[in-house]
Image (cartoon, rainbow, N blue to C red):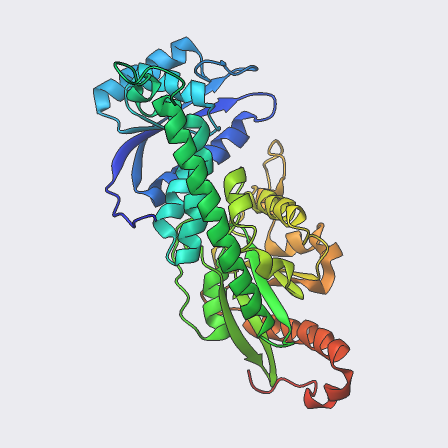
Length: 403
């Protein structure tokens, strides 16, 4: 089982690639996020390296000239980790380690490391450990040099396993054991969900660090851990909430992120059963983030992967207190007006207008517009409830004098 470790800050550099799929602005945005991930994991970024290339180098991802530049910086500044924004193949990771002689990390292993630090319950830690072993399995050859050697000598000749085959078998056995353990826990959690009765279920979903846990705390008057770091919440938290006199269940789920490792999507699919079984989704968006539209797209993509894209959803645009728009001077005739120049009122006239009353603008931290939020959630939950129990409609009058 994983052990929680206190990570000391270590020096790191980031490496990104500009190609046909990722222009310069996109790479800058990804590296900003990668730097935040590095900070969350306990690292300090000293420099970024970016290379423009149409076809990545199959041996080292980046070109030899750029690699020499990185090598010189790593050597002169005693860098502990070199972090690539794109996932490396096992061969690339081996080759780069031989050149740079330091720890080589890609986006996937960095996210796995953060998950390992953040996992609190046995369930979450088991899920993360499974994801780590599945990531590790094809990379075993690059970790220990002794694994390549055949056990030989007197009495050891014959069809015995090489050490690398032994280690692979051990890892596969561990993966099998963890999957069985998760199946057992899944059955227990399914029973727990079944014991909750027929209360309406509402789930908070969204990109990581958009304020889901803060909103959960405000609405449910609970104390779910919330912090301004990525993946502050891994364990699903469920609370009973009462608005007016209407009770329902509200769950806070793990946040999503772009380029989310496949291993994590697979191992955390059982955790996302809370989303699958929800009657209503509250899609929380950090409107103050410059790329919030892409965050929405990433979340919708993952919701599609877990068959939840068509669920009844309210868009909750959070952090309106932090939203700032760029301004264009009246005499400026050259600057093109883009989304970063929009006020919130301007945004409401864009595609958000099609969302209609399913779009809410709040600040969970400063508790702005929460009355409107509660009223909208109440209406949606009430509609679901009276459809499910038409005979007790009279129990829930349409007034919200108290929350």
